[in-house]
Image (cartoon, rainbow, N blue to C red; front, side, top):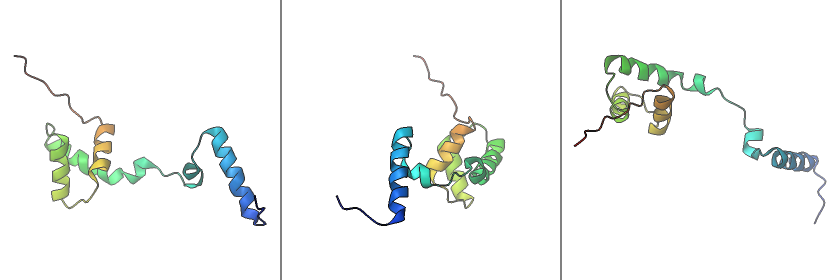
Length: 96
């Protein structure tokens, strides 16, 4: 194996072994943490406005209303916020 004279190689090697020991991915080591609540504040507020008016709608109806209102959020992001707010309703099934 060839030895490198680049000083950053030692830092990268240290980060690799440290992440392996702790069980952390390299991406998580280098990525800056973001506050999910702050990032999703707009989604939360828009979703809560619709829920106040129509509290028995399901997720897809809420999502389509948000799209009609001009928001272009991904359905996976909206669904995550929807679940975090505890809006997923239990369905009652008919018994025959």
